[in-house]
Amino acid sequence: HMHTHTCTHPHMHTHTCTHTHAHAHSHSHDTPLHHKEREVVNTHVTSPGAILALGLMYLKTNDSNIAAKLDVPATQFGLDFVRPDFLLLRALSHGLVMWDHVMPTQEWIHGHIPPFILENASGGGGGTDMTPGLDYQSLRQAYLSIVAGCCMAMGLRFVGTCNQAAFQCLLANMKMMLSLLSAAEQVGKVTLEMCLTTTLLGLSLVMCGSGDLAVIRIIRRLRTRMASAEVNYGSHMATHMALGLLFLGGGRYSMGRHNRAIAALVCSLYPVFPASSNDNRGHLQALRHLYVMAAEPRVLVARDARTTRVCPVEVCVTGLQGEVQIVTTPCLLPEWETIHKVSISSPKYWPIELVVDAGNRSILSQSGTLFVKQRGGCEVKASLPMTHLYHGCGIKSLLNQTNKDLIGNTFLKTFLEYMTGPRVSRSPAFCHSVLVECLLREQFQLLVACLQLEQMVCSLWQRQDTLQLWQIKLAMSVCSVASTQCADLLDMGYLDSLVLRVIQQIALASKKKYDEKDIDDLLKFYLFQYGPFTDLQGAFHLASLLVFYDVPHSSVLCVTPSTSVPDLFVKARLLNLSTAAVVRLMPLFQTQNPIPF
Image (tube, rainbow, N blue to C red; front, side, top):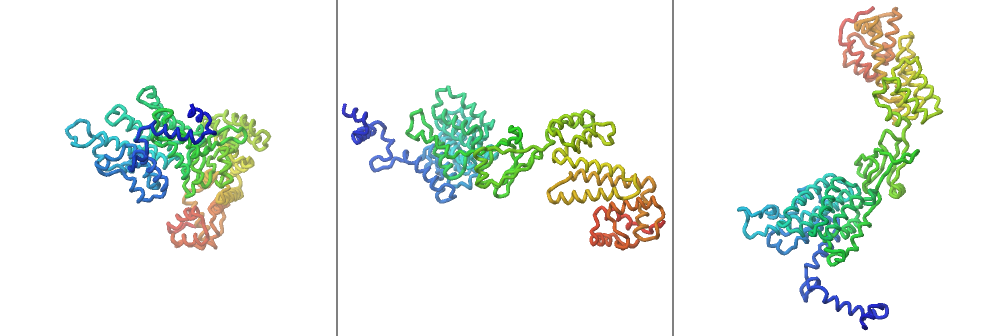
């Protein structure tokens, strides 16, 4: 009665209660649970803690001397003194120490397995090739335990990275272990269950927060066994921990890889699972919650600044070493410590660039939201398929949509009304492409420039002067300089098409009066100074050629009929002639005896 009273009032009789409980505890468990039996240390109790302590003390040090102490015994005799679960812990701790040497390959895993285990782990099926004296079940258990430990080390090494090489390697080992469920007696059900759940946790660590479908299928398959009496509480817990890691924070969180995070994950995912809900002998179950110390918010969601709706946007993530990764939001970013900057790379949205310093990291990690502004013509461009370009309804539909979004813009309204009117000289395809280009840039004043350039190209020969050509060349020169300063005024592809059309116009107009030989003779007459030029129409065509190709005056160029092509190249370099001009003049110096007028 006195002992019962002391337990009821612990503050009054603490020493009595402690003595009584200690005496009861000494008889409540079997002897092997004590770490010391007389003068001999019970390594079955001390080994797990010592192995993990060694791994965590030398975490990421790549110390080969310490890692050698964690190697798997290389002989059958040495293997008899190490339990399979201790082999798993050794492989795990070896990976923690040799952190930078963990590779996402099957060869790295097999490098930890002694050759005699690799050679005999698949044998023992009762055939004539069995070696007497070998315990094949122990070899299979050793093989699976080492593989599971390496898979857990690989999962910790690439946690939260979604590394595809690591994912494929772990998935292959997971499928191998799943195939052994039908022959669990040959391996040992307890060992197979431990290795299966450990590998599953390693796989979920790599794909942490991603909700990967292949991992979900494996978890769903394992959950169908929960009603079986052979599946204990530990397997049930490990399977659902893997599911929780896969959808960590609803897909908004991932795991860090700093030292504290790795240590917390080792404590949380310690691969010795309880037999029941109140089993704390091998591992205190409260430590399973330490995974929260490694969790980090790393989601990036792009929202439209006008509507606040979530929108998919291509984002360029640049690492500290210059490596570039293109992802589409919503997505999980890599570790903040490895990111230099995040920028918008989608042509549909205005560019944004955030250098990940302390301030921006705090903003992104707290909200995970990046507000973006869509370019003006993207909705219109997406809503009109290319099949509508050559129908009248295409431009009218474009007019209706644009009036809703950009009502009040004078340039835009005037352009659309003109294009839907009866006196349209250009095709609907051109009208659509020019309008969408200006909408994308939100520079509607370029509509007038594009129309004027088109009009100049179409009416080059309606006036007997070269003013139109000078205007076109001036526009191309300004746009070319702007493009070198990353400020494109007009699309360079459109300008190149204008140049090609001018060349075609000059050739076509010249051929109506002269053949190709006579055009060359006009140039020779000018370059070699054969006298005054009397043909006014020919003079206009010659002037157009000289202006467009920037051919200097004959007194500056100083060439004769005997000038060679190499000499022409030297003069062109000194006078900064364009490549197009050199190509056009070359045929004149490859033929002899020019014909003067």
